[in-house]
Image 1: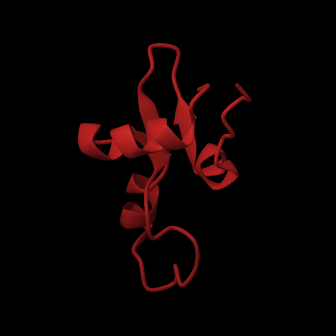
Image 2 (image 1 turned 30 degrees about the horizontal axis):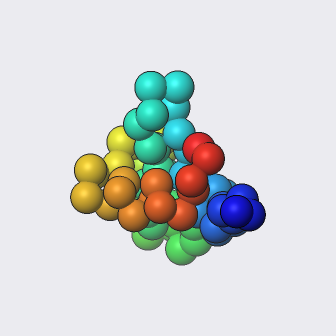
Image 3 (image 1 turned 120 degrees about the vertical axis):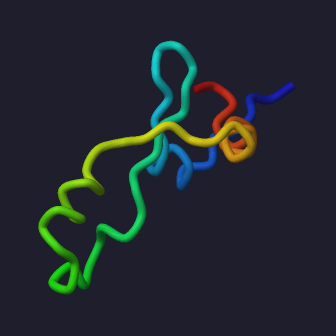
Length: 65
C-alpha cells in the first residue's frame, strides 16, 4: 500500500509539539495593521493550541506529524 500524502498547506500552517498538541498562529496579523493598536498586535504574537474538534481535521491532513 502506498504512503499517505501530507497536505502541504496544512503542514505550513500548523505545528505539532512533541506531546502531540497541534498549534496554530492567530488570525488577523497579515496586513492592514495600521488600524490595530500596539497592544492588540502584541497580543496576536506567538502560537496557540487548537481546539480539539479542529485538531481532528488537521490530524487527518498530516498523517505523519
